[in-house]
Length: 472
Ligand code: BYC
Figure (cartoon, protein in one colour):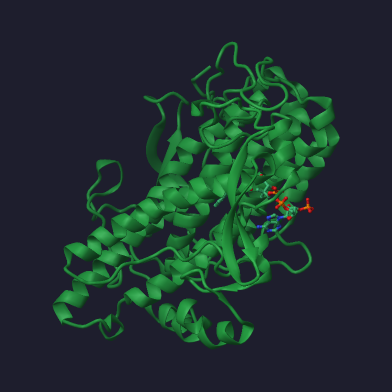
């Protein structure tokens, strides 16, 4: 089962050739996907050879193979993690029952919506990043961008497989709709807020891969606990690909911090803009923006949807199987923020409707780890400043804090105070214009833009001056 059949038109390890109806449905969808990729995928570079990795099997050893590929010829396929024999449902009302191999009829609509919401983010992110190739800071970074883009495309395939294989005609309609919505489009926007924002420059992209892809990690990990076994296995394999996206974000921002600190030391100045780099104050503003947009992706603090997903056995907690409790949570409580006038307090609330907040807490802890590592870089340069995650209520559009204005330090502000100070906390038009002025392509082998340090090593043991994308 672990091996992937690349002899087929659609590479897969799901026995596609034994299911003619599904094979036909997916083979009809494939050219539409390619049309979407050509129209909405990376602008330019489609005919260039890119040094990409492709999954060759889903087990730990045989995962990836690196080779030169033109992106439209990338072998997008259907890969599920290996089945766990005898797997049972790990939480909710069906705890202990055998995991479902088919969609439980009564949960069909809810499950379809979860899969569609997840699926919608994947092409959205490709659309958001499509113009970045033109301003890449190096061939190494360009290659990593394209790797992420093709894998997001594969994650779309992963969700379309579930829709087509398990949801009949409505599933096929949803698969079509996933190719029709467009990030940022007024009439046909993508479903979740963060996926309609622009990714206009490489700093925003690195922030996106750090903060927004990390939401992906937590949502996929919760869906990997699902009692619906095909969803669980699909998400388990997606998580292995997701790890590279998070690596790009964390190390990418780390390299920007590194370069900034080097220039601050060399130039004996905080004003590294004069030296053509990004000052730490601007980095902080971009952290504030992308972190707050990503916090919204977890939904409201109190959500009956989240409670239902759990009780139904469809979406678990992060690392559900490692938790030592009753996995039903009917009588449990969880500490959730609350607004009392202009004060933010904490109150024990029923655990089930608080599951979004709990997942957000797991996410926040994980986000902090990377910020700590960036601060280590700053400290090593003997610079007295720390990057910080803003308060969870800062600039929120979903949930409790959408009703108020909150400063990065957690103080509730009046509208007037917020308006007077928001330019200190969020990228201004001038910041964005400055950033745009840095976005000049660097495509010479082994060279890197002035605002970002080279990585410590290349991809797959290759040197830094390797032709990661053959432009000639
Ligand atoms: N924007 O009960 P509530 C990734 C809606 S990222 C707009 O609080 P719920 C990736 C919500 O739909 C991971 N609308 O929320 C990363 C609901 O609508 P209805 C993506 C929003 O349902 C980078 C209403 O508000 N995967 O993979 O508990 C690159 C009340 O909502 C938003 C998933 O998200 C928003 N931000 O939770 C590529 C997993 N938030 O019912 C890929 C699947 C909420 O009133 N999705 N609403 O019409 C879910 O688990 C849930 O849908 C959510 C929302 C956690 C997103």
